[in-house]
Structure formats: C-alpha cells, structure tokens
Image 1: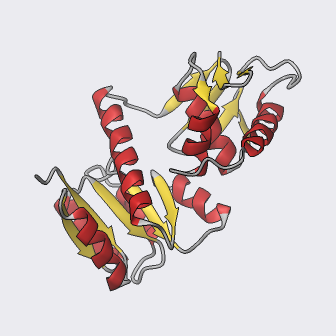
Image 2: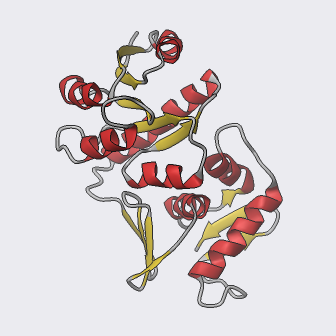
Image 3: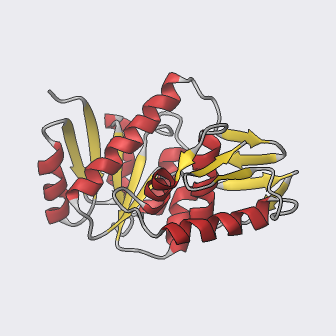
Length: 231
C-alpha cells in the first residue's frame, strides 16, 4: 500500500529511474529534470518529500530549495539534497537554505531509503508536537535549526557542520544520555560508526567554542564509557 508521494528532481534519467523503482512500492513517484519544473511541481503535487539534485538545468538545486522554503504552500516539505559536491561549504549552504539532509553521489539505495525514513520520521514528530519555530534554548545558548546558527548571549558562534549536528542531537535529547554509537550514526551518517576518537575531538572543539571554561564544562557532560549529555 502506497503511503505518500515523493518528487525526484535530477537531470540524470538513469538515477531517477533507479530511485523510482526502489520507491514506487511505498510512494507515488513524480519525476522532473530541471529546476523551474521542480518549483512548479512542488506547489502542484505537494509531495511528502523531495529528493533534489543540485546540478540541474534551469535553476540549480540551491535556488529550488530557497524558492520552496519561501513559499507558504511548500515551505514545510522535507528536502534531501543529492549531489556529487562533497565540499563541506556546499553542504552547509544547502542546509542553511532549508534542506533536511544531504547525501553525496554515488550512494547506496539502502542508505537513501534509510535517510528518507529518518527525515520523514523527524517531520512527523515536528508536526505532531505542533512546533511553530525551530529555536532550541540551552541556558544562554540559542540554537536555530532553520538557519543552522548558534548564538551565545546574542553573539553568533561559528560552528562546523558536524559541530552543529552534534550540538543539535544533544540538545534534542536534553537531560538524557546520548550514546557514542547514536552520536556517530546521527552525525557521521546512517550505518557509519566512524572513529570514536573523532567524536571526542569534535566534542572538545565544541566545548572550546561554547563553554566559559572548557576544563569545567557546564553544558556538555561526559558520561564516561557511554556517551555525552546536555544537563
């Protein structure tokens, strides 16, 4: 039984066909191959999720994302960007424009399916809680998940993408332990448990930027051998 609708935007026909075949059992699939059509189809079809390539004719995926987010009818539709661009700056740009996730080509179909499932579950949780904004407050730290921006006492703190996602994951679970495995999976990608030492390095860098004294942290607490939590 089909439970939703997905809009696939990619100028590579073989990719749209591959994704369509793997999604059509559970979704009604709509495809297009340029940016201008994507914006119109998003308003016409109101899909449950959009898979959006960046390098497309007409207008690129960044501009498509911006227009969708600025339209009242489409601004809440989840977007996963698909692209060969691997530079962190490109990922940050897409996320700041409002993309919910970002996956680089080539990708495994199972990873894509897992990302779609995760984004839709997050979207359902937000709808269920009737969240009217995306501001999280932790003491004097403000986290804007729409703008991918963090402020402390009103001053913007420059974070890398991974640092931001680490903070966001901990903040969403405020008061609860988040295991090392969950943090690695959430921040470094589905099915990728990465290097535990890498996680510790990122936590140290995050503390240096957030804490008044990173030797005596008041925001991010270490639960030795298990993970981290925001008190």
